[in-house]
Image 1 (cartoon, rainbow, N blue to C red):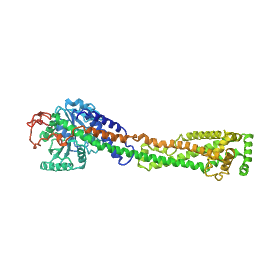
Image 2 (tube, one colour):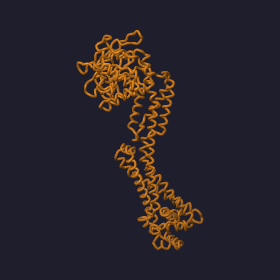
Image 3 (tube, rainbow, N blue to C red):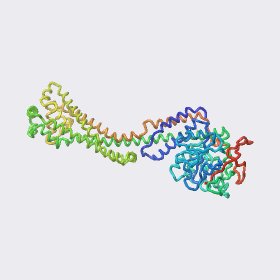
Length: 622
């Protein structure tokens, strides 16, 4: 394959990009996206990276196919040993069995191929999820046979493992039967082999004697129609065996054995098999990787939709707080009572409109003559603002939880977190009251600073001092919640004239324009603090997205690696699918013997220079 270091490093970079959950949200056909991701990462780990790392490593021929196609019997018969356990119960193959020559044993027992499957050696069937490796002297060096689970197994894990093993193969030895060769499941795999230019041979087993040649002809027609014309096709007749574990007579599988040996014995044939399958798998990345990138883009789009829902819900929460600031509701109840205590009797409010100066004198006397209940008013105002913040946050959280629950992606994300987490998300965060208290106190300090700065002018210092800094600050706070700050004029008195009172007293102290400016600044600062609080509360939702969403730049990075792989492929020789495999031997009639039955690997020279097997094991029926 030439110098492939650059290509190998690009594949490793691609693998790093895939080493995370790319599709956490239920967007589109996310199950297909996740399956495609598993298949690609599996093929990178199990085949592409190991094969590019060791181009001259032994070939792996995976024997795959449908239930009852005789895969295990075929493997046993080819190697002339009972290395895999056939049977009538399904599923038969629980753990895949890899049969290799003693020469190549070390390569396959190490984690070079299929590194995710723990190795098991020795007798026994092996545990599910493991790879059983056995040696047989009849297997030629340079080739290993792997008996895979059924592609249509009733066990989902077996079907997935069968697909994984086929994706890790240099060569498929695909088995089907005369009764089931037209089933859709096998053809979906065969079309996949076509799309990826996988080196392939088909074994048609259990062919009744009267149908020999007829079924073969029809299967060849189907192969041609599906773009697989020229695929090597072997027939294995239906035979009566003494028991279910028996191997087939060697003459039934001799053509398959001869063909496999011809590949294993010829370094050029092995290299062509590798070139064909590897090139096909690499070329498939030019469509598979961009498809994954598009699916990642869909994830980001879906995540942005959920973020937009969060923004909208908490924007409504902030608008609700704005309304609470302006509608005078904060100046009723406890705040009104404490305000009346602060300014004195109702007579003062009634006399204010006609004589603001006289009101100021009485307030000064009130302030200087005895302690004013400033702290009670400040505490009541603080409590009212905090309650308004909590109500706004609770409403926003409830709206957002409802919005996410009605959206497939949001609902899946909430279900992933569990009922307890989702329930807590429906209310403001537990620490919001403490943070709201801190924010309101910070705002009150800011308001006092505003009054202090505005009162630094010599003309207003005396007036502010006469009221006291805290008293003037409280008047400004009251104005924030009952006035537009002069932007649209003084509002109608709310809660017994509270807004009119605070506004006029402030105007008497600072002047009309200064009051407008102070009110706007105070209101804006409070609103900014509340916006931060609500944003922090919304983070509880968006943090869920951040925890699962693919990092920004993942999709462009995937497309860049796909482009880099295409560039590297231009440096490689073009593989010819039909030329990659040697021509198969002419099938023998039942009962005809080509060589003594002493094993698969015995090779002699042939007049045409193509190695031929001098013996074979026997092929599968079960």
